Image 1 (cartoon, rainbow, N blue to C red):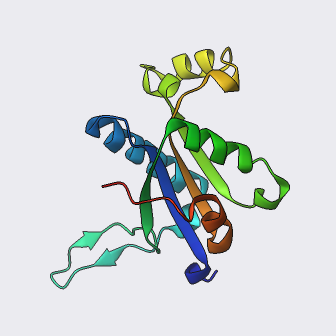
Image 2 (image 1 turned 120 degrees about the vertical axis):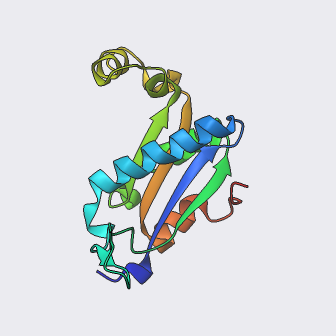
Image 3 (image 1 turned 90 degrees about the vertical axis):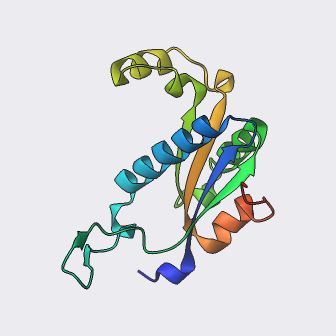
Length: 140
C-alpha cells in the first residue's frame, strides 16, 4: 500500500482538560492500531543495537473540535462514500467505566444520540479524510 495516499487524524474535544485530551488520544491510537495493524512499520534497531518497536508509517495530526463537531463527523462516516474509512471513537461513557464489562453493559443501554464524544480517530484515503476534517485546526 502507498502510505503517501493515506491520512490519519484524531479530532479531540478542545474543551477537555489536558489529562483527558491525552487519555483520549492514547485510547484512540491504541484502538486504531488494533483495527489497522498494517500501518505500523517493522521494528528498528539503533546504531548501538538497541531495539525499538515500529511506529505508524505516516503522520497522525491531532485536530481540535467540539463534541458536536465530532458527532457530525461520525454521522458523515455513515454515508456510503466513507465505508472504507476506518474510524474509532471514545466517549464520556467509556471514559467513566472502570472495567470493560461495565463499558459493554452501559453502552448496550445508551442510545447513540445521548453519547458525548471526547474524540474520534480516522484513517483512510487522504481525499476522504480531508473531506471530513480538512478545515479543522491543529490542537495546540
